Length: 330
Image (cartoon, rainbow, N blue to C red):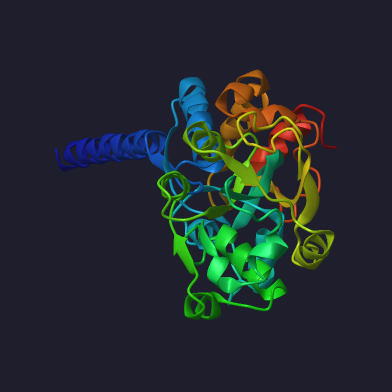
């Protein structure tokens, strides 16, 4: 009798443990991942939301999009507060090495792919302004009336490098009667349209909805960067580039090619996210390239056969599995 009871108890325990294990698998499958993007109203935020929808349609993986930026996204990923994040090469390198603008090294950073378009810096200004170059604006600091992203955001970090080039800073601008405000891309656009500021400094994918929206209700122009400024910024990992002529039809100098700097977009992932989930995400992105263009026009340049090249950080095993499976990576 006791022997039969022991067998029965053992059987019940096996059933219970099996049910618990099944519950864990189901719970894991239904978990919501977080994708750290960029400021609301910008290309990163739009692209993350659109690609997340594709992934959910294909695999049922729920992904929520949160605002961020290259500087915030590095700790987000490293601490697993976000499992996916947009980043850019200079900041990935700096984060792994613990160099400026970071004060520590970050771990658990892997890559799904790069080549997700390029973000161009826009120095957009009220078209009625007499200034035709960025140099002219900084000749007299009381003329500085500009909006950029919040402090410790990648756009704002680059803006500080621009100020360094012109041998000034926030305190000098304020003391001279100028002003700098910080906000999301939407807030910057609203401030420019409402006349609260005269210009914005933003890093945006082409064509940028923030610029398009601002130019519909207000005449604006985009000031080119000088060769000297571009050369100075290049030491921090920014690339010399242009905003092609015709990108913005309603910008007063939109028919011109505009000199600026840019940075590429990289999709990073927490290294501890399981291989199967990352494989599914990578597969969905790379096998729906025709849909990516509908998410954001800048994604037309994305090429699955090149996405794994020059990764800066290691490819995640799930992404590597996909690229090898397709024969792109040996």
